[in-house]
Length: 352
Image (cartoon, one colour):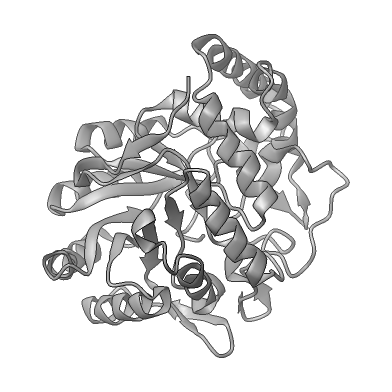
């Protein structure tokens, strides 16, 4: 059964059930010598991809001010020129950066910086409002987050922001944030067929939040194109994977995650879907609040992912089979090499 739209929590904002993640279209940027982008990109192809997504019914576009040190927002703004009212823009703030050098420079969780950041994002996006404005600092303490709520509410009252959320995997903090922040509408967190998030989904249900899902395809692993011999280039964040990026090590796909992909491939593709379409169908079957945002930077990637909308959630039988296969892999994952990576590694920092 096709699935086409979902609601961003208590905001009432309707979005496509599938979003487009825009990290990759930001292009190169770095923290010192460590890349934080996905390598060189073709801005014109990125613009074509965004517009093709709109044509195919994808309306939610998720970016961040720090992607490409501001470049990602500018590209998205160009792509949506003349079509702004068809789109729901989600962006993030909290990390600081230098636009000229394309360098990450730190973080600033202050209300004053929040004011500057929203103004800068509106300018780069060439828009008069941000539909979903998300705190990017996933490990920020609750007192510091609560200190931002007053400013966020002012931005809503001024019409600059329609709703806001937090990009975090910290369930307890997301729950408290939802209770103290009147216009909180979503939490962005990791969710995929390889990594469930039952506690976070339960919190979303309890507090009427949308579940916006980063890494729904395991940063590419659930596209099926990577093998143990695959090597990522050194200008790709996956090529020199930082500690918060669990899917790759030493520029190669982590073998324990490739084993999990192999285990669920059959169940995810049993009804004729591609592997990535099956992985998206799993997310929709998992919860009615989920909105996966797979990253895309080409028209072909957009078209394959958007086709999943017409297939809809996995059937109950196929979903149950994926769960059965994963349970078997979890049982087998007692080898020493797997122990640090299953069932849950340390909660990653806020990036991406």
